[in-house]
Amino acid sequence: MGWPDEPILRKLDNIREGDAILSIGPDGKVSEPEWPEADFIVGNPPFLGGNMIRQELGDEYVDALFRLYEDRVPHFADLVCYWFEKARATLEVERASRVGLLATQGIRGGVNRAVLDRIQDSAHIFNAWSDKPWILDGAAVHVSIVCFEDPANNGNKPPILDGVAVHHI
Image (cartoon, rainbow, N blue to C red; front, side):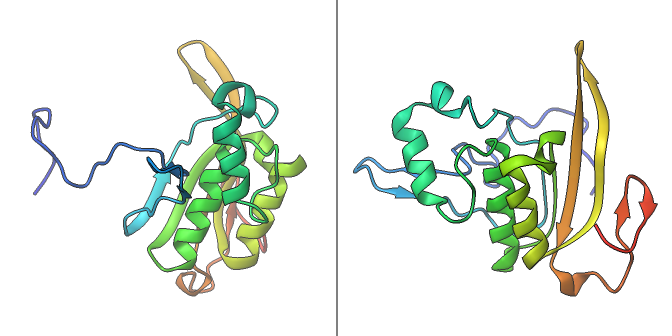
């Protein structure tokens, strides 16, 4: 089949525009959007520090987000943590096989760490980069990359951390 050599200029049913972590209906009802089934979820979720979420997204949105993800994502976790939790939950209900997401290195500590601990409790982190330079258009940050899967998919292969096989991540 190959790759198209021209831009795609037709409607594609597998690309949707919308909020990936929170849906507020016209009646004000809050729900969690269902992600489509996928073999592998790959993403670079938007970064917004936990202390800036309310300022940037507003009280109504943040209050709804906190209620919807109560007991799953700590309040004031970075916004990216909601994508990690949503991907973990999608994997848990077998609507995906593997996940690979990018975050800042802040994902590894503070209140954000709880999201990785939750992933480790229900999935298997098979590949991770703890501190990778990301230089783009003059911005220089350090990112962490976390790839996880259903433990049944692992086949007893050792996980890879920063390019090296290890016993446990």
